[in-house]
Length: 84
Image (cartoon, rainbow, N blue to C red; front, side):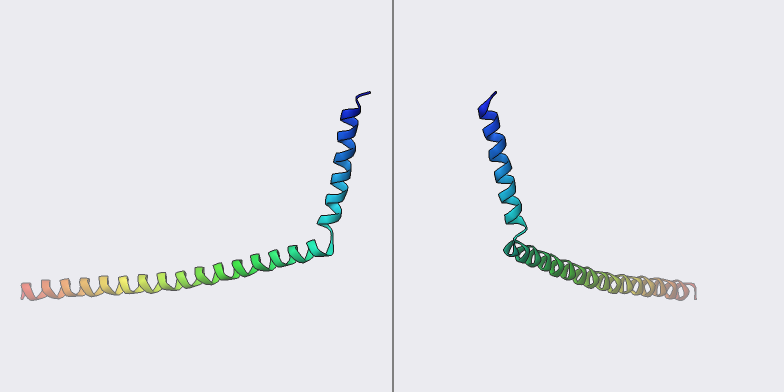
């Protein structure tokens, strides 16, 4: 029997068991909670910025439409003046 492989298997089992204990400890849960809270704050801030960008884009589009309507009206008035 290969004792080296058996030893590595035993070490792996011990490390895995210890790792599970660490990952499920109260301190680890506090860290997970803080990371999750930070992620939620990040998501909220991202949504706020996206809403602000949408509002700005809407304002820009409305201003651009008004500029085009004013330009079209001025061109129409110029054509009428030239025809008269």
